[in-house]
Amino acid sequence: MKFLKLPLFAMALFAMSCQQAGLTVNIDISNLETLATDTTSDPSPQAMLLMRDSAQWDTVAITTLIGGQGVLHVEMDQPRGFYLFIEDLGNPFAGFGQAGNLTLTGDAALAKFEGRLTGTPELTAMAAMDSAEGSYREISQSISPLYRAAQAAQDQATMDSVLGIYNDAYAVWMDYVKDFAMNQGALGAYVANRHLYMEDYPTLDSILAQVPEANLEAKAVVALAERITTLKRIAVGQPLVDLNQKDTSGIDYALSDVAINQYLLVDFWASWCAPCRAQNPALVAVYNDYHEKGFDILGVSFDQSAPNWIKAIREDQLNWFHMSDLKGWGNSASELYAVRSIPQNLMIGNDGNIAAKNLDPEALRAWLAERL
Image (cartoon, rainbow, N blue to C red; front, side, top):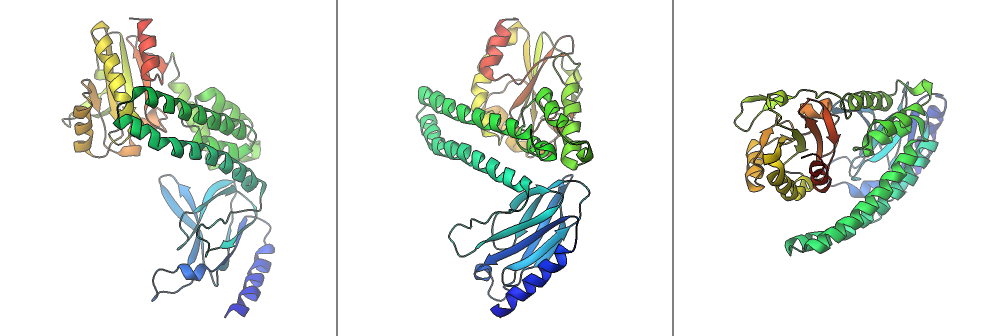
């Protein structure tokens, strides 16, 4: 009965408005009931607020939407990232905050639902960042077919040209993210954790420094502080942090077991990682040119499937040391070395100290040429 929708929704809004603390999400979506996929089920979907706790997602608030309307509320002592998920509506809506009245409106009958969470300064800032990311993603998606076609045709010149366009777009996006994170308090820490995968600790230290003292216990801020501590522990000049996993035969193996002649590159990769596989031929070429001069590689795989891992080693002719705990992104190296994206690498000298970090094959060749 549609004439009951407004009074019910208004009463819920009034009740929530009496609460001074926490986040309140007011939902009003037209034609939501038309998306129900099962005609025998209740056409009133559920709305849920999800927050991440370590490796799992927790539902912190849930309600049934009547005629597309409902209210969610959650109390928080610190600002946190969250997702609003609505059954039958597709992708969840990302948000961040601690207190405020948020609104999600829209028409579910549209071919592309364009609803957006609004209502707080954090959400306004996130909307601007989403727009900037959209520009980067648009460029990335538009050139991806060009790169694949050039790769199939073994047209290296075109591949290099397209990759240059991508790298320029990515650099612009990363500069935007860093500038954004420097001025957003706890939200800046949240954004740094989500997007600045390759950034080293000086920039992250600056982002952490602008977080208000009242928010230093926020989960995103604590996570950023822990990441900075790890990055300082593995900074250039620091002694290597040992790693114990298994080789391709399932035998226990440690990083410290590798006899380092001159330099050892610890390469974080995976069989499923397209950028890793794309750079492997160039990495093999560097290895072949400098191995006899004292250069070795230890591959640390973020795979979960041993057969896929071993198959990729053979296909790409990676004739060096290998180890993995086959836990995917749960690989122990992720925490020990703050690895948030791959490929990444560390160069270890024969003195046992870290000599360089994150050298792509071209930079690696130049670095070795100066030393070997």
